[in-house]
Length: 239
Image (cartoon, rainbow, N blue to C red; front, side, top):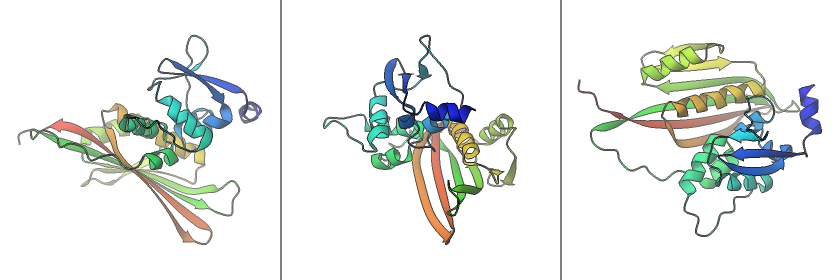
């Protein structure tokens, strides 16, 4: 049983090679936030890659992972007084999907305007999760992921690449695609969300901002909404 195996290894050291920097930590530290990409990865929901020495390999900024790992260990963000890489660290926190760290880092600074001969393409991804308070652990009742964009090529590539997920086009006038699946477990939701975020990022879009909203609709039910806005620069095309 893989879950028993993972459970028995919770406090064993795990060695990671992040962009050439090697770190050692425990499995329980990496799984501190189950919703994060690292939580999904070390629960066995996402494929892992090993380097020649058997270390887990992640192709991201190695030196900045020090701050990511310390946050996972303490749930506190401690940066040097002269730290000048907040924007880069925010991108790493977005990549790893560690929500408390994203909130600690605050909203990104306003972006400089693009040259007048370019415009912004925007992709919005939102996740709505209804949770039952009476279940232990909390059960996901229904999850819906929605992608909204006017970049038609992006919708077509998502449609072709995520064929195993049940999805339907909600409103073709706004080019809105809704990925709806449920009732489903938490792991499916995290897996799909992580894959979508990665897919959109690899298509050249950068996360502009992230929002999380919690609300109680009824005494026994919570709704959690996540929202990401991605932007990419495009050249104007003469009509």
